[in-house]
Structures are given as C-alpha cells and as structure tokens.
Image (cartoon, rainbow, N blue to C red):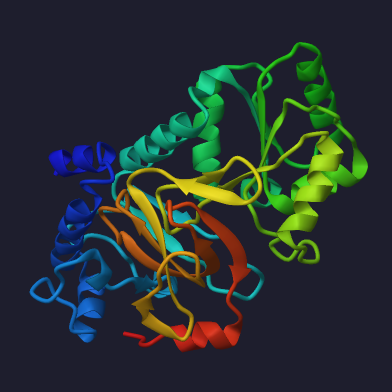
Length: 326
C-alpha cells in the first residue's frame, strides 16, 4: 500500500493515466459504494481500459454514504459547512498523513517552504467548526511557518490590520488566507496598501453576502490591499488536494490531481479542452475514499491543463446530472 502512495506523489504526466487506472481498480475492489455505482453503469474493470472510461461519483454521495475503503477505520471526518437547511458532506479519512503530504507538497510546489512566510488565516465560518479540512491545512501551515504573528483571526479586523502594517514595515513575506466574504468585510473597513502581500481567497460567500462575480471580488480586494493580483485556492471537503491560482483566475493543479469537464446535460460524456462544462476531479490522493468525483462546479479547462472556474450549476442542471441514487 505504501508503495502505491509513494508512486502517487512521485507521479508525472507520463505515468498519470496508468496510475489513475490502477487507483480505479483498487477503489472498485475496496470502496463498496463506488463499486455499486460503477456496476450500475456497467463500468467494471473488464470494460474500463482508459481514463476516459472511468465513472465519476456524484459529489452528493458524500452527503448520504460513508465513502471509504471497506476495511478502513476513519481517523478523521471532515465536514463541509454548507448553508442553513442543507445536508453537509462528510469525508471519512483513513490516513491524515496522506492529506498532510498532499497539501504540504502542493504548497511547496506553488509557494515554497511554509517557514518562508508569516501565514495569517481569516476563516471565521470555518473556525466556528472543529471538523474543517481547510482549518486542518491552515493550522499545519501556520505551525510550520514558525512565525510569532502567524495565526487565525475570527473577527479581529483591527488587530489583523495592525499586524499587516507591522509586517509590511519589516518587509516580511506574508500570506493572508481568507474566505471570500471575510476578506470583503475586512476590505470595507480597512485599507492595507501592502503591494507585496499574497492575498489568497478560498472562495465562498456561504450566504453571508450577496454573490459577486469573480472580477468584482478581485477588483475590490486588489484595491483594498494595494496588490496587483489576487491568489486563490480551489479545494473542497471531499478532496485531499488543492489547486492554486496566482492571479487572473487561472488555476493549476498538483501532478496527482487533474480537472476535466463533462457535458452539463450528459454526465457520462467528457468534453475536450476549451469548452465550458461541469467539473470532474481526479484526485489520486483520495486513495482510500474515491479519486473520481463529479462536482457541481463549472469551469473551462485549457489545453495545458490549467482551468478557470466559472461558477456553479443551477438546480435544473444538477438534477440533469444525477443519474441515480443508490
């Protein structure tokens, strides 16, 4: 098992498809709910010979089922925040070491060692829960940064502003990681004027504010913090890997993660690059749950594998994509 995990994190473009098929076969045999889903579509290992043949499990299954290897005992259960009245997703994690390896290796790929930054996390809606995968990741990065000022902020905007101004005066390298609505709330109260600051939004209004376009959000935050571009993190409760954008809404993935799109009204048909479609995620770090997930996000994937998030499907489109309920 360890050898397969090691191979996932040593993957490259030439070995991705072969390893993805191996992970599919592994999960077909060991993840009961995924096997039942595949069998209902008549997509068994005998008929799946290419990555394009692999079925993607609708993300809603994480709300109703324990998506985990049948002989595994979860050591952690990550839960989505959702909105009032909705059922949260639960990700039963058999090995948090794989999650840590995934997000640390990914962070280093895009930004370098956490010890090179002061990391400030403005994540109020997540801090109010104790089972957020984002909080788990941020807490680990904060500890590894080793900086006195690194830490979480709930609604202490004035304290955060003072820390930012002090770090700016000392020419420190800083990452401000924040949920979108909280960053906007801060931006309406204070101006930081910190051109070298990395402002990284994690998405989501969570019903706290009116929805804005990506362009509107980026313009407001860039103006408030005095930065030329906004960074973004794309992740979710059901995944153990993240994609990052260093500006202009263009995301790139880690080598063991891949984004493809499907036809909005024909969920079994994958699309070619440069077309808008619903997002299917391959996250091989999800070895002990499901690595092939059909989300309700919309995106356009470029020829080089980068992608641009374009929002979420409406209810009619989601209903059209849900073929079955086991």
